[in-house]
Image 1 (cartoon, helix red, strand yellow):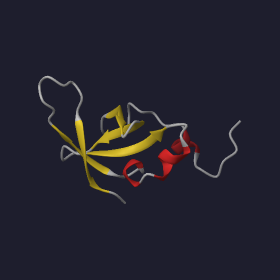
Image 2: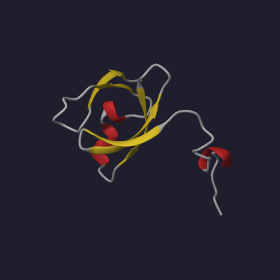
Image 3: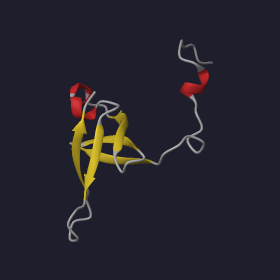
Length: 86
């Protein structure tokens, strides 16, 4: 039983039916879920962390726009550039 003022369809939603591609990446040492936008940018959808200080960082706030910078061939990690925070 879920007691909440948030509508049920927002709590439990079908991730396959929603638009955009989601990916889980590490930003600034914290796990975040990114949602791919139409113009080759990504926005932070949610932060997954047990560190309370991570939730105070404006670059990890949901809605922050990010753009990936092509990494060098020898490094498999992508570099993320913050475009705009809400």
